[in-house]
Image 1 (tube, helix red, strand yellow):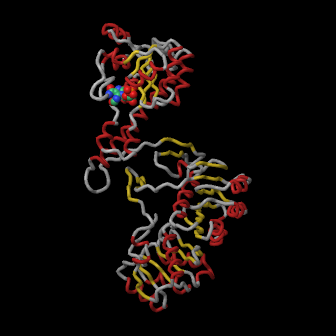
Image 2 (cartoon, rainbow, N blue to C red):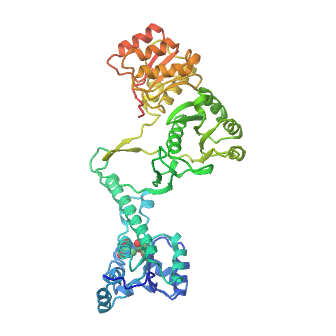
Length: 520
Ligand SMILES: NC(=O)c1ncn([C@@H]2O[C@H](COP(=O)(O)O)[C@@H](O)[C@H]2O)c1NC=O
């Protein structure tokens, strides 16, 4: 096969069939003014004709009426041979001539709004009706035949179309890029249809996990490097809300580690209902606190470990105000993420060159989370705070006197906060602010030692939470020896009796939640 055509393929005949009719009249007018012959489907053709632009209805090309409520409009050889003829092959052109079919140089299609229909809560029949069949067929055909045809699926590209037409047609590289975009578009569309079918319409079984998982991610950014400077990295977005969609108000580009820490900080701050600030370093908290307002919460969180807070990532679950901004500005901070910032807070924080400010609106958390393992992927439902085991009225007091309301509130704070700490995790808090965090240890005794060491004098009189049960009394003993006044843990060890006995001997109330919050 020889390249007999110039790089640019002039646009002489275009096929237009769009569900989203944004900008289609302007496009049609521009094409018609450039001498392009227009062929179009039902409502698109009517829209173009109503604007006084010459257009041939596709039925005139097929010699066949649109039928079955629009299920069949363009599924016809007169359309598809016109799209698929490879104009580099003389035999294709000859066959089109024999068949009396004219070729298309440009196909402009966008698809029925399947995802939006599902999201609207429509009944299954309505969702099924919004599965576009003829549209993807044309898009895929035109994308396959990109050496001869340009395909456009995005109304935002109409300006480029008119530019290319004026320049004498699309170049091969442009047609290739459009083809890539077109196949990505239909692939994402099919993932949405297949996911809905397997997850909602006809689940494979009652496990809650579909037998097939597809995903469509769009690159949002190429990062300077990955976890380390010798690693390359990029950020991809799904269509779910979340950190990857946050608006950066100020500062340098987010790094890979910034994203990881910001995600952890955001989640930690949102495990509490009261105004809360979480300060994260290397995915672990160096301070979490709630306060009467967000500035108070930040003061308390920072006081937990001011040394580690240097270069930290801060998340707030409320608007960041001037008072908090002034406090933050006094400490070198990598990122501040919040649902919003007051104008004066932005003014103070943007005066700091190195800080990154992210506005991330509240959104419901995802139901499941994904973690790649070599050769596969783990899926699990997200560990949420707010289940039965997080409600203190369901806790069992294994030994000791019940805490008063304020003491119990403190213990609930510790319990809700320990979830943000990588296992093995022990967290000490006082008046709803962490005072000592022991994280990421391979045994619970060392986690307890670390928490106590970090708390120093503040350990005495604090309350303690353990993310999982104490397998022996030794870890708990470290806390008791440091003078904690109450402990909460899941319980469930075969040696629970031994553990409870240690608390009893020390006269310290020990609550059992029955729920574990490991974080690896
Ligand atoms: N059935 C077909 O042959 C067919 N051909 C094109 N469509 C879709 O119909 C829409 C355009 O139709 P109209 O111009 O009538 O609004 C586009 O979203 C296009 O993707 C079709 N619809 C559904 O499959």
